Amino acid sequence: MSRIVVALGGNALGTTPTTQLEHIRAVAPAIISMITAEDEIILTHGNGPQVGAVSRAFSLGAGVDEGVPEMPLPESTAMSQGYIGYHLQQQLQAEVTRLGKPWHVATVVTQVLVDPDDPAFTRPTKPIGAFMTREEAERLAADRPGTVVREDAGRGWRRVVASPRPRAIVEWESVLHLLDADFIVVACGGGGIPVVPVPGGGVRGVEAVVDKDHCAGLLAESVGADTLLVLTSVDAVHTGWGTARDQAVADLPAEEALRLIAAGQFAEGSMLPKVQAAVDFVLGSPGRRAVITSPDLATRAMLGRAGTLIHP
Image 1 (tube, rainbow, N blue to C red):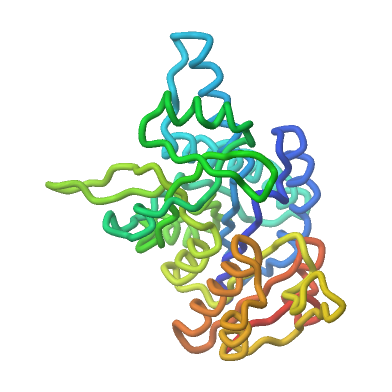
Image 2: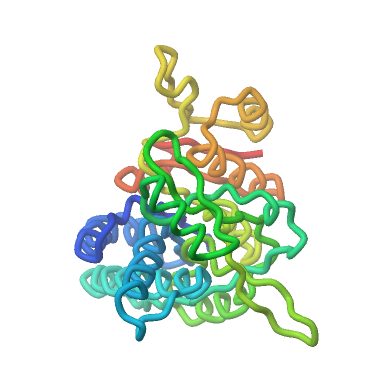
């Protein structure tokens, strides 16, 4: 038996519900084709465009209708988990039914515990939501005290929030119970809903975004997976990206990956967190592997014929 966590990038899902459904319909056969009768699959996904759209829609609505509330970021993340999971359930179940397989599909709205003293809370770095003009950004910061806005690579201004490291998956046991009942499970969408402990027990949501790749690695660790499959917009991990020395890497030992990270070979917010999460996962216990590739090459990559294999 193989237990596989599949991480699907949020940008690969499109920016509207219509395009998202089309993209998921296209990728569903590739995901299901990887599964044998002995496999267990947990699917996680990004939500960058989606959570930004949810948050901005409520902000705009609140500006013209007093009956529409501002929506806090934890609740916006939960909403994006719900509607992305809904589309994934529909299309994956349709493919399962078409093939006559016995599996079911379910989404777990997932909370992720973070450390309230994480230094990230004092240095917000994660851009969310739509681009704004400088005037719009200044107005947002004035209207919502504590909101941090920042110019983003010459493309406009965006809100930025903290991105603390994930420490524990709150609903990990629920994921295991569903796996035992022959479910394909969708969990930790968008890096999960970040929460911190409260006095007396329980948790509360915080205004932050957990990196989806680090969360995928922690999810894989928490459920005892032996494979982490990261599906992104490129065919493999590349060195010298965008230069004359650009080269895809098929086999990447963890120690070599750490050397390339230290040499600055991978872009922050792009390939870097994927490689870091993969290395952390494979070094956590013997017998693990991580694969990074594009959705259309997923099946071949799992057989060692495409993508990048990261291993101890």
